[in-house]
Amino acid sequence: MIPLVRPCLPTELTDRLRDHTDHLRSRSVTVTAARRRWKNATAERSALRARLQPMAAGIERCMYCGDSLGTAIDHFEPIKLAPLRAFDWLNHFLACDYCNSNAKRAEYPCDPLTGACLLVDPSIEDPGDHLQLILSTGRYRARTAKGEATIRTFRLDRWQLERARQDGFQRCQDMLRGYARLLTRGEHQRAHGQAQALLRQPHADVLYAMVRVLDSPGAAVILDGDILEILRTGFAVPIPWSGASGRTSVTSDD
Ligand SMILES: [Zn+2]
View 1: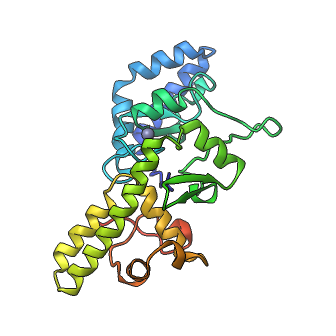
View 2: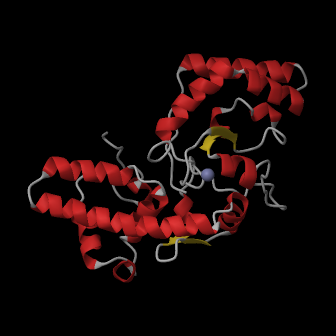
């Protein structure tokens, strides 16, 4: 999971979403009515999807696992629990079929004392503050109770994801070294293409974890010296989510 920047919606779409919510509220909303209205709002769902796609990492990856294509709009707070949030833009994420239908489903764990949601919302907080990705194993370790609930709810400990993150770590290092070699040879255009390909890789959380570790005392233990050097000084292409770790916040230029 990586930090995501949620764009503002056009006024016209915001108004349409508000109309749906007002309609539901005026009818003493039920879960069934909210689901039906959401299902029938084809144009709004299509417009929302178009806004979510560029917000996702890489090529429209699931905003939770980062592995598969995000094919569905997930309600972070499920319609079952909050029917009035069916058309709430802040409640919408792009999720893959597995995360949406098999992992999270209608789960929404909350703190029993405070009632606060225990899931990391990557559009309003830095997942790295709650989840630590161990690059060598591809496993997530919880830093907080919220991190623990997030791993459990989204099943971020699936062995397939862990294996894919391990592979992703190897691939990121290979691509960074390839990028540096191209730069050394003066092949700037190819190097730029390599960098863009790196940013489009699935499991963006791997590159994000590598960037986050740069300023930590153990960086030299976790990353090889040449990789540290490339990421610290030799990578000229902005990394979209690097601002979350206190580094320069920029957006991808492709
Ligand atoms: Zn997923």
